Image 1 (cartoon, one colour):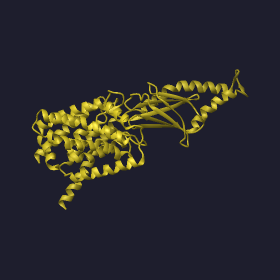
Image 2 (cartoon, chains in turn yellow, brown; image 1 turned 90 degrees about the vertical axis):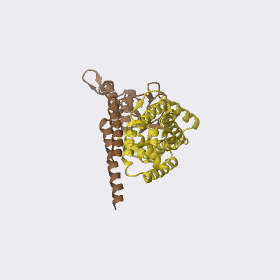
Image 3 (cartoon, chains in turn blue, red; image 1 turned 90 degrees about the horizontal axis):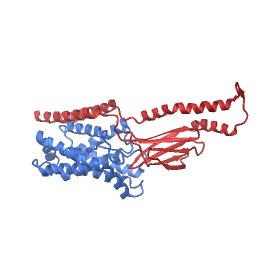
Image 4 (cartoon, chains in turn green, purple; image 1 turned 135 degrees about the horizontal axis):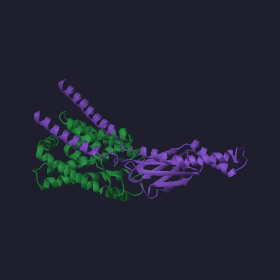
Amino acid sequence: MHISEGVLSAPVLITGAALAAAGVAVGLKKMDSDKIPQVAVLSSAFFVASLIHVPIGPSSVHLILNGINGLLLGWLCFPSILVALTLQAILFQFGGITVLGVNTVNVALPGVICYYLFSRLVNRERGLISLGAAFACGFLSVFFSGILVALSLLFTEQSFMSVAKLIVVAHLPIMIIEGIITLFCMAFLHRVKPELLGGIYGKAT
Amino acid sequence: MEKRHNSTMYLLILFFASILIISTNLPALAHKVIIFAWIEGDTVFTESKFSDGKKAINSQVLVFDRDGKQLLEGKTNNKGEFSFKIPKLTDLRIVLNAAMGHKAEWKIPESEIRETMGASENKAAGGSSQSIGVGLSKEELKELIDESLDRKLRPIVRMMNESQSKGPSVTEIIGGIGYIFGLMGVAIYFKNRGKKA
């Protein structure tokens, strides 16, 4: 999901940076001091998750965890992911500094979308619906990310559909794995710390 | 207060447990694409792979000269390799275009090409030879040395290639996490200072 340096044209990079800045601004505004540790923990989780590589499929794909980030943080996942991506770019040379904005939007926006789609369902009484919603959240957040990557490559590659198809197919195993991870995480939090889910949900709406 | 403390603790425990699990099988990880090129005789060999060691197969390779003019293009085979004859004496910029926005490049400076090209030109000319010792001309001797050096150095070149593509080290990973928690401290500091003022 990390688009490399020098692939995208300037207008795409600037649009991405502007959108990312807006998202981060919203996130920072919503961030209370008691949420900061949670943002940091999820940011580190995302930072490390990109190193867990899944050797299935035609390309090289890794975990993303933007579903969990979005579900637990809402808009706060923008600053969380920006920080993690910056460090990945500096320390691992994943992506790059100029593409930071685009990459942040590609990963964080699906998280926010999934937060609005699923947080109500996930926060219900623990049961089939809430677990199903958790799975769908993990699955779809990666799917949306793939679509966004294809969109940002629209101006460099020839056809949107073929790139989108390629990315979605390559990430299919990841989608399923992320769905399962999100499901177990939510089930765990439901049992151990339900207020962690409810707290964010209650405050951010 | 107590409650909040607890929930953070749970997350921390979960998180460090996952780090432990991850760090046990570190080498085969990461996500970045790399192209590596070297010269043997008059041919440039390239090898492309993702930083987890998986070969970048069937990917486009473009070769540019110093002024950014495209000299040739090709596709990597199923071992991620692609080779071509040196098209002209200039700085070569070899760009790998793997799918999904992955891109990498490798530069070969003109001086490096001139050395190897020079050697083969001499071979073609074959001309005036200063004989030293037992019937071998200086040029022939140089050629022989070059050839055997190429052969002997190949494993070392490969090794460099391997070390190039190593994933992030544990130090970098732990360092990155340290940065994130440091930022957390700074953020909390400023939030709290704002409250008191």
